[in-house]
Structures are given as C-alpha cells and as structure tokens.
Length: 255
Length: 322
Image (tube, rainbow over all chains, first blue to last red):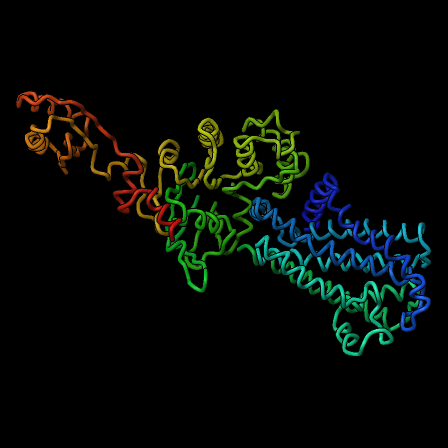
C-alpha cells in the first residue's frame, strides 16, 4: 500500500511539475491580497477596537494560508474529473493497486503543492512585510495547512467521484465555498467586538473559522490558549472524516 | 478462461430502473479470440465492465482467469488486461513513463517494468515513440499505446472494448494485425467487443451476438451466417419472363423464399455457387436470357437481421431516438 501510494504520488507530482501553471495561478490570489490588501490592514488593526490582539500581519498571513488551501485544494477534483473522462482512473482501477493508494497518492501531491505555496507566502510576509512569528508558530501553521489540504482535497475527490459531472462540480463548490470563506473571518476577523451576535454565532459553527483562529493564536505566540486547542481538534476531526469519506468513495466506485 | 452465469445489471435513470444486461452466460476457453457483437447500447460495455471488476453484477456469478469475480476481484485484476473504449492514457505523460507506471501498479519492480514496457512497446510498433509525450501521438498510435498498457503485465486474458472504433481504415487493419499476433505469438486469450460486423468477421473465432442485454446467438462467423439459410441469388431478366423465371427458381434443389421485384428474381439456396449452373441451364432451355446475375453471401449484418428482425444500424438509430 505504501509503495503504491508512493507510485501514485510520484507520478502525480511529476505531471504537476511538468505543468506548474496551475500551482502559480493558485498562489496568485493570496499573493495579490498580501500585497494590495495587507498594507491597508496595518492602520485599521491598530485603530479599530474589536480586532484580535497582534499585528495586522499576524492576523492576515495565517488567514491567507487558509484561503490558499480552501480554494486550491477544493478544486483538485477538477483534475480527477478530467482523469475520469480520459479513462485514467478506470485503467488504474483494473490493477491490483489498493484503492486507498489511488486516493492517498493524489491527496499527498496536493498537500505538498499547498505547502510549497504556503512557504512562498510566508517568506514574502517575513521579508517584504513586517510579519513576526516564532519558528514553532510557523511549523505549526505548516502542519495545519497540510492537514487542511489533505481534508479539502479528499472531499474534493469524493465529491467529484460521486457527481461525475464537470458542470455541477464547480457550481456546488462555489455555492459551498463562498459562505465558508466569508464566515471564516479571513480578511476581517469575526470577533465579538466587531460582529453582531448572530454573525458571530454563525461563524462559530464554521470549522474553518476555528482553524483560522488557531493559526492566529499560534502566530501571536499563544500556544496554551483555548483557540489553538479547539482549532486543532476541529482540524483533526475534519481531516479524519474527510479522508474516510474519500477512501470510502474510492472503494465504492468499483466492485 | 471466462465462465459466467446469469450476469445482470441495471441502472436507475430518472427514477426508472433500466436493465442494461439481463442474464448473460459466457464460456470462453483459453487461447480463444472471441467477439462480443451488438449495436451500441446492447450491453456490451456493461458486461465487460462487470467482467473486469469495474461494476458489481446485481445477479449472477463469474470466474475470470481462474478467479472468482465476487470473492477475489484483486486476483482477477492481477491476471487480466483491460483496454477501455476511450483508452486511459495520460496526455502529459511520456509513452514509456505511462507504460512503466502501469507495470509498477501491477506490482512489477522498476527494472522489470521498464524492460517489459520496452518489449511491449516494441511489439506494438511504438519503439520509436517511447520518449514522446502521449498527446503528440496520432489516433492509431494512441490506440496501440492503449493496447500496450493492457499488456505490460503479461496477462493471460485481455479485454478490448471497441478496439478500432474511430480509427481510419489503415490504422484499423494495423490494429487487427496486432490483435491476431497477440494470440498467435503469446497465446493470449482475447475478448473484444465491437459493433463492426466486418471486424467480428475478420478477427474472431467465435462471435457472441448481444441485443437488448441478452445473448441472442453464438457461433463462429461461418456458423452464424449459415443460420441465415444460405446465399441470396438474384437474377435479372426481362419483365415478361419474370414469372417463368420465378417458377424455375422454385424448382432448383434447395431453392427457397423466391421473390420478384421490377426486373429481378431473388431466392435463397444453401450454396449459390453450386446452384448457378443448374439455374442457367434451365433458363437457357426456357429461352430466357439473363441481364444480370449475382450471388450475395450472408454477412453478419444479415445474421443480426435474421436474429432480431432489424439491422444493427436500425438498432442504433432506435437507441439514439430512445
């Protein structure tokens, strides 16, 4: 199984590297926000009551990394739909290779790609802008974004496999992702001080909001707060459930 | 090599249960080259997808390449090659890379997979193209790569779904050569589906005719054609001599189903070539001069027509209309 996962992973990676345009396009959006929106937030954070503690870069950078995973990893199902259309998936299914390996190899490729993009954002935030965070915080954030990517791309593959429809897939994704994105407080944190009660309550139901909060806490150096614990638990559960869903869908798709 | 009993599968579409395959029995011996012939939508691909573990049968059981389909699907996958109708190549990949990957997914080591990929590439005339990107191949080359992908792990049994659909005549003939060589050189059992009658006729030892999810006939192309009760002889004669000619035709030994239209009389005999001299002598004696003479040997199209009451083309048009 490990060997097969590695096979699928290295093949997928090789093909991705051969055509890096998608990875570049994927990281463009967060980078644009970093450069053209980040600087605006500096004074806003300082002068607006209700913002969480920490500098604007400690608030924005982790959020952009979550945004990166949210929009990058969620759309990987598109690639699978193309592979389905071309018969690549079927061809691999009529081999003794484990169904789980066919999923994990792809999911791991996506995680590595998201990590590389996240590292780029972090480097720019540290060097060009005024981000300050400990090594521990950075490592923790990378672990979290890797988990997030695993979770989202598993879900994306599972959804693509269940739908098998290249038109319905983006329609459903956009419908689901926009509210998740806005309710995560990525650009402006949804805090009790800033948001009306109902909006704050709603955002607490959004697992991604907890992940963003946890990353922000770790960037501030608060490793012992509730936010970090809650976010980690939410992320862990989300990742486990997503991988389970993905694995089940991949297995069910053939006899 | 394949033994199946009562395989069935239906699909739900718009709340209705549609039976795609209703109880198919199959028996394919090792080393046979068997064709599954029927119009599009007859249930060929569905049956193939069940036999290759891609689709779970709703009823029936099968032993494929010595392994039980339901109990040991992985064992089946290990021993068969499957070439889907649309292939399964990766456009961004290189030819050799794709072949090696397939071998490795079948559990071969890197060196073994590479050697075997080269060998199978050579066998299918892809030797010069191994380093080329897959997307740069022509239709015929890509189809050969599809087939090569199904052979890397040296399976005893290969399933080919419509191996030559959408190919130009030259590439078709070329693919046929390769399929024949597969059996002749390697002893591979080949099970292919086709809706081309000439393909089944030219290639297969045995043909299974499927229509509406059921096998309606099976036999060698010659045996199936014999079911059409002989050759069709048509004689062109002057209009005045039509009825006389029909009468003579009816007296020919084994002559049957005499019909007249415009200036021709048509009838069936078991062997047209043997009936002609007798017919000509009789017509000569009656003073009737023929304007044309034709013996039409039955094709598998006639077989399909006899068995189902419609031509494959009609069946496909009905399918499109449905």
